Image 1 (cartoon, one colour):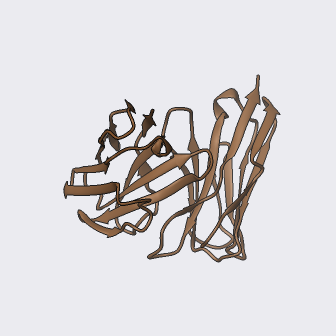
Image 2: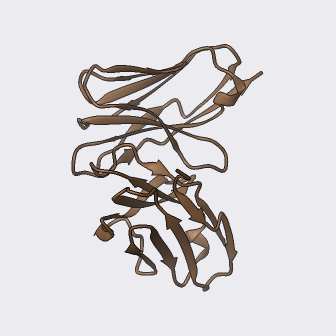
Amino acid sequence: DAGVIQSPRHEVTEMGQEVTLRCKPISGHDYLFWYRQTMMRGLELLIYFNNNVPIDDSGMPEDRFSAKMPNASFSTLKIQPSEPRDSAVYFCASSYGTMNTEAFFGQGTRLTVV
Amino acid sequence: GQQLNQSPQSMFIQEGEDVSMNCTSSSIFNTWLWYKQEPGEGPVLLIALYKAGELTSNGRLTAQFGITRKDSFLNISASIPSDVGIYFCAAHNAGNMLTFGGGTRLMVKP
């Protein structure tokens, strides 16, 4: 298996622009998670899906953030409009069965908003 | 909310030395996990612990699930340069979110 695939690996955008991050989970996994990692706050869970349905989005910082999972093999995290404080590494992870035991992470998208 | 206190925050050791890091919490957890993150990569699962008192090894790595269910440690024996990275503990209870520690940054001098 190719593992969790995220794209792009790096994104540099100007403040105010829309940013879309993409994730392909491991085939057969029924849970998908979006995390944000910063030096100040470490790894933070933003939202997670079970069987393509958003279950808990309490970690999403603001209404500027939205996530979708139209099918079992694809998810997006969108920021509109982006702000410099959104700069971080965003990880997607997936797991099978019991919520987040043994979650497998993608390589992340490093977002820089200037 | 639930927090995991991981220590030390960083370690700079000589190749060949043994390493020990730990994670504590004021809350009880049923599952403890240890991840390693290398530069430019996502965290990779090293060891998963599911039972209080459990001691599990993965090569030169050994981790234990504390008997009180409030702590866990990770040991690395005979460190090598490729052990460099950030090690994260994580824990959760069934039906709850995975909580991560702040990480231990390990640097190994050849």
